[in-house]
Length: 466
Image (tube, rainbow, N blue to C red; front, side, top):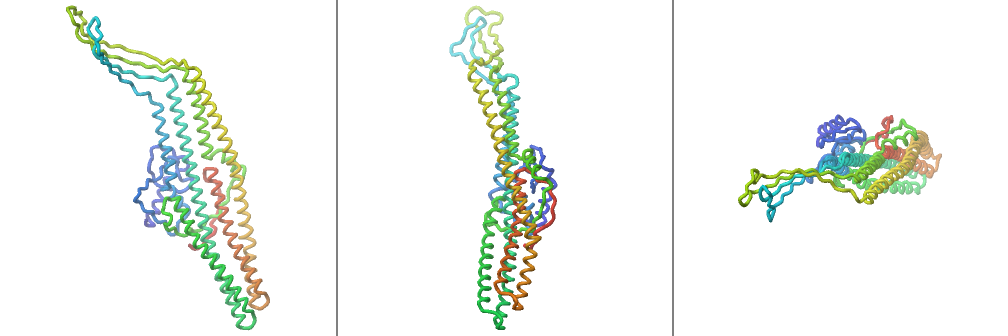
């Protein structure tokens, strides 16, 4: 897919995004969407075919591009969407009357009446459930559909969290590869200095050997990082329903973002917006409705009907004026709800199911609060490490390495000091990049637990060459 087509495609997605509140139930295949806030609830994923080839991502693909592709093609999200659509179609079925019943009777032995023998009879009847039964059934089906909608939302936010998690790991792999490659170049310079000092009679040959050993170790680490690219790419491709080996470009820079909410506000947002809790609340409401429906079983259903009887001519000498006249009758019947123990058990069952739904929601809310607390700890801890490594330790490590290498060149420092300074520099560089990735992953997890994007502000960070 050409870059212009991809840009247009994503642009249509963002224009179609009106926030999390899209409610158009009839829109089945709208344009793709790209973020938590950009996926209206009523939008269906695309319908891929078996012959569809994975479309390549642009060389400068961003996280939004990956989210857009996942929203379009992920089969788990599609399955959740169609379960929701199937549940929506249950409501009109629940609110509808039972099918009318058409009956036909043929009299094997004709019934002789004053006006003639009865030969055939045709009847049409319709059952009407007791007042309120149909509306309660429809309400319960509507609440079940709402629960399926929120389960779809839960699958969506979980999918986006998986995409972000793999994307940030992919970003860290890129940065770790770059840092390792840069440190290999630094070690080559150290090895060249050690060799020059040895040739000048100012250094020992073991220093050259140790520099070459460190080069070999870093080269092995670089090769390990390169081989790690394949499984991480496979993780990303899996979220987008692409072959595991489909190539993906290196990600660009990520944004270091800070939330505008404190921890207590985040916990409050979980209780308000988490789609799992919403689905469980819908299920509890459905069970309340089913309690009322179970109580309606104490009341009878009414059946009304009309019968048409085909009457033949009288046999014999007597022919009354209405001889052979067909008969028409109306009927009314109702079932007799006499099995009171059965109906009482149905009410108790519905009550217990309502209590089970309430306790399930309470348990899940407690578990989510604990998960959010842990994610918030990871978020704050990663932020602290970013400040520590990037702003404090890393500049000092760079200064230390340069000063130690200069002193070694002048014969005022030992080779061990240079190696230690280089190892510390590499460790701090990788730690700074890991903290940046971990902070972004923690924020993605928090947003998954909340169920929506959180208000935050940030600037570009971690810019690097693909």
